[in-house]
Amino acid sequence: MTTKNETGWNFNNSYAHLPKTFFTRQNPNPVDTPTLIKLNVPFAESLGLNVDMLKSENGIAILAGNLIPEGAEPLAQAYAAHQFGHFTMLGDGRAILLGEQITPQGERVDIQLKGSGRTPYSRGGDGRAALGPMLREYIISEAINALGIPTTRSLAVVSTGESVFRETELAGAILTRVAASHIRVGTFQYVANWCTVEELRILADYTINRHYPKVEGSENRYLALLMEVIKRQASLVSKWQLVGFIHGVMNTDNMAISGETIDYGPCAFMDTYDPATVFSSIDRQGRYAYGNQPYIAGWNLARFAETLLPLLDENEETAVKLAQDAISGYSDLYQSYWLAGMRAKLGIFNEEEEDRSLIEELLNLMQKYQADYTNTFRALTLDKFEETILAGTPGLIKWHEKWHARLGRQQETKESSKQLMQKSNPAVIPRNHRVEAALEAAVERDDFSVIEKLLEILSAPYAYAPEQDEYTSLPEPSSRPYRTFCGT
Image (cartoon, rainbow, N blue to C red):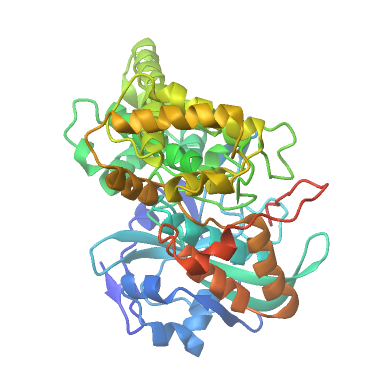
């Protein structure tokens, strides 16, 4: 039953009626003096929410977890994960799912409070979050959305009026995260390891109904589910690679079955092109480096396939063969998405066998001369290659001639190619030094104007507007590599 109130909350909570082993019912832990820091007004309106009511005392109390809205059924979800390759039991250790909002368009989305206090899955943690990391997730997730990449989104950030203690004392905050759902590969791993086969079937059927209803009538619906998830993840990771995004912690609990980008911890965007780029302070072996992301996605999908084995076929040998065949198609699928995206970045409409070598030649030059990834493609789009570090290099001159010859072998005009490139190459990304400057202004000086301006610039990354030019500049040279942290 859907329950709607004056704030616009319109809950219909299907996950709360799955087997009780999947979650623990629990309210968020109240906080002292919540203050609204940031509200995503256009997004709130698209969800059917009353912005004025959200800004009111009661609205802020809901976003802080101090007040439970009518129709909500708060719970913490259980899940497991391979973290850096090691399997462990996890769960929502600092998040509460308030419920599922039915939007005016009839879509179903999760409303989750992140940083809302301890749960049975906290494993000794305090269940809280700091203001900086929550604002960081807000910035990056909204930037990813503007880039046209599937992602969870940020509705609001509230400060709690309380401190959290990590290496130092930090201001506490809660992020309201909106997702197609929070069902993860790790959710299936948890159910497959600690629940019954029948409960696994219930989870799989629920996931099909919620995210992949078109496979309902398939001869083997669970195999069809696996293949659809493979397809979405191949597409998602190719989109990350095309814009130079590095997730940072691609553990299996951070892979959403819906195909959305989820859990923005030590994520960042690559400046200098280098497949070995790692930003996360905890990824000391480079497991989740930029160049490894496609392979790790395949590894995670294999773990997902393993959970489905009891459902794929009664005969274990047959089930394994079905899973292996499905997973074996991932690499070619990813490569096809990535290659199509790279062709678009170079203004190429049709296909030739030599396209891959043309693309790889450019990437090799970028790596050799330490060229900026985003600005190189921006310069190509604007036909201002003389402004890049590659200008005048012997390899680049030869490559440039090949590229122009390639464009000349297609029917589309030069102007059509430029338009395709502009739609495929962002002029701006959330540069790490810009994000850090915005967070420092907000957290250290209580100045949120820098974040507001950054969010405005990032909201139209393909606009190529004059006011974006200053946001394309690179950080000052530093002897210390840029590092990001989970913020947990």
